Length: 424
Ligand code: HEM
Image 1: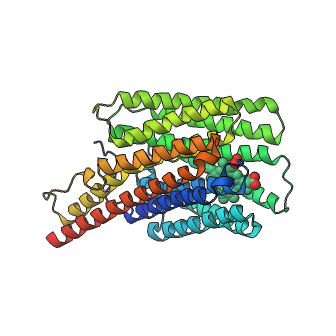
Image 2: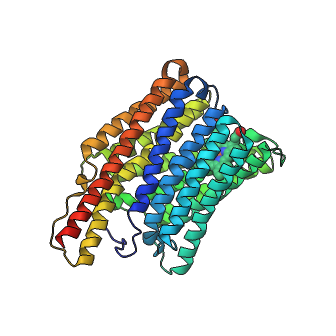
């Protein structure tokens, strides 16, 4: 495995990504629970209070936790230095995001404006604090990774997402006049799902493929070009709303086509890998990419928004990050213990392999539960009375299995850490 660019000294404590990922898995559990309890109401329409609550449990509860946790860990590689006061800053970001998401989701659930406003302020504040910390770290370090531009642009897309989200919250409270709410929601979710999640997720996979699967590298220049093009098209799409220019709305299908093209490039890159092993993490990645195609087909078909949301939020935005986490967590465990050994000056003692922290068998069981849950959810989007509750049940089970796998990895890491301390 190629570990070029990773620095042992600068890696933030491993407990930081674990904390963010464990919280994210609890939010997936909350999604399952809401589905079980409110099965008959969730699939009424995409605008139902429960659907809005679930959307933000996934986007802010799961995705924002996973993506900030991962970025805090990855930043020393991308920017050459960690965020300032990494332990305290990440603790504040984590707690604000956790509290903010819960309040925002509860606010949507009960249609309670005060809860929505408090939740929006806290979660928006957490994201802005994170971005400010990243800026400080970028300014402090002179070094830049090849991938810094695509990651940077991707993260910038969260600013319009949050800004429009907060504007709509003010609109719901009657403090500002929002003209065409459904169209503004479309701009908000496009920046969030395509601009932020899409580009950061694809940049992460492009970054990790050569390291973990020994594939050819995709040139940083072409990666930056696609991400910049997506941002430009998103700006045009936003102008279509603000200036009421319908012809610019064509930018959205073009962005979708670009993501499908990038998915094809990812498939090709994975096919070219040197070690032809198919591990579970690849199954997660492939299923995520296939879900993107299904989401596009459902969108073109155009009569079931909820089906598009299931494929996009569940199929792509949850499945791909989980696959990445199953690849990254065992590596981080091994990497941090290696670092401990180097610090102790004992490079000779053997560390367990990465499979020790999360076994293939455990990851595969989670994969089967997760994919079954997504398929049942897709069925529920078409036949809610038959499948909604069952899909929630499966989703809760899958998330508990995810939580279990992460907790076991942490416990196994701790046991190894203790063993190293005793040996000394
Ligand atoms: C502080 C952060 C955020 C706030 C305050 C916020 C607020 C809102 C509001 C007020 C709505 C419209 C609700 C309505 O129509 O009554 C909405 C919809 C939506 N938001 Fe957010 N949002 C935030 C972050 C995000 C992020 C990060 C994403 C995606 C990555 C996202 C995805 C969505 C989606 C997909 C919908 C539409 C749901 C649907 O069409 O059914 N939001 N948001």
